[in-house]
Image (cartoon, rainbow, N blue to C red; front, top):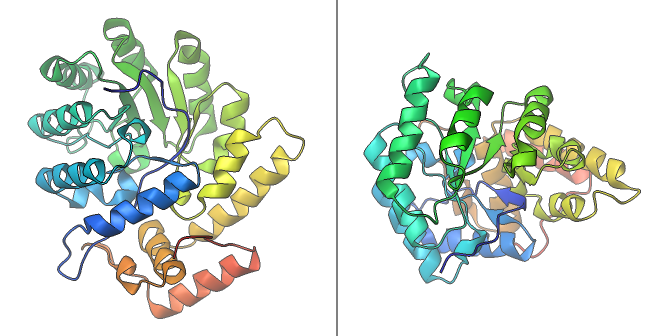
Length: 306
């Protein structure tokens, strides 16, 4: 049975490993998920940094089944299920709910641009009605720099009014603190859970009543990010945030997904981790060495990964 507890804390949009034929590698994924859980980080599998939109629905369904079969707790999972095609979103969402996942992270259908809030409302409503399961908890995914289709405050208000049991929260990856703050001020009192999309906003989000962060670099730096979540009221919280910002800043000098995979490959002693699906390119040798050297300067480590 699905847990009734809401997700909170730090979650990673878990990077997806691929084998030599560029098929998803379930065994590597299970190992990485276990390491993240050991570091107190939850699992937003099939997120942006999972290369989710480079994978088919069938591949994602298979990986979800492998994770559950391997004993990865669904109560710690928030799979990304938003696709451009409505039936694909329904199929993934239905499978996640059926597996007992605590929630789903749902992109708006993002191929068509300049769509109306009415059209987006109908899309989310159709998913909710077709899944037809009271256990469904949707976390809206606002990432206008990538999707170019915003989840507006007006849309959230309408969805919360009509589907208060299913619309659980949001991941705000706008990179705009004013927008995150507006979501908190408008909807947090109604039990709408706000997660920032980068740990750079984690301390501010928690101080304003937010629930945590769903952030790419939790894949590689889970323990320090989770520590700030647990201790954000401590005297050294601002120093912790500054340290997280330094590490995040290093990764942001590179293409994020290949950079993180190169670092995982290095610390795991597993070169296969560096593979990405086209159209992405792997880090070059020179890029990898510069990235690793910059991380070493700030005392970066991935204890227990290998």
